[in-house]
Image 1: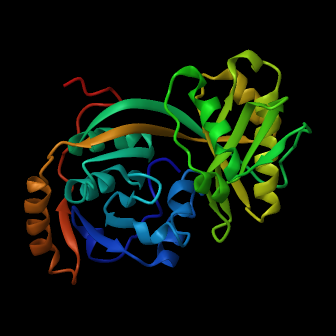
Image 2: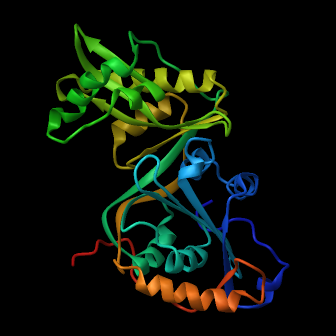
Length: 316
């Protein structure tokens, strides 16, 4: 699924050009909406887990082109996820753009013109979501070690070895699933998780990194295998990750482990165009007035053209 969620042929929106927007705190309803492509929706599904859900806001838009969901979350840093009908995504973000700055962890390419209406979009990455189940997993052996909170300083040192900052805490590593490979006392390759959601049966592998001097030896495959194995053993029905489709060695490594390519995913840094939120506030007022005819807490948004442009960066 890259562009729509299941469509509704009935209801007041079926015969008019409006999107009806509402907030949902019903995780069972959200779970149903997100079930169409679980690997693509993995970040949103993960935020249905207690400990993340209470820090998340989910907005649903239903209209003539289908249904959309937008999630704004803060437990793991300001994060945005967009799923479903592009016009529905545009309807939601025109009213509820979230915090001033956030990281777009999941969007379809088709969403980007609509997101550019609400945000300055920078550092865009065109990625591929991959996933594996226990039935297809083909693990590889290696002398890996389960990493704990006390290893955070070694993990940070490895991630910072190419100049970038790394500030993982002991608590963050302890809550997640991390495996590493060592040369003596030196950590030289690591893989971890972004989200582990056992109640949703899904997890996301990430932060795979190998010291430059040790690349090409298959170490990343081994640590990724160890993380994936533990997640599947914990009962996760699916394990997902995101990869640059131009990264041939990574694609080969993940394919060897049984990961299958899925939907294209766009990641980016977002900054709200209306920094003071005046425009969205006025639009919400109008949308609530129009939505009153459909029920309480409903906002009605005209789907009339509001998108232009593509995946390109904002240069201003």
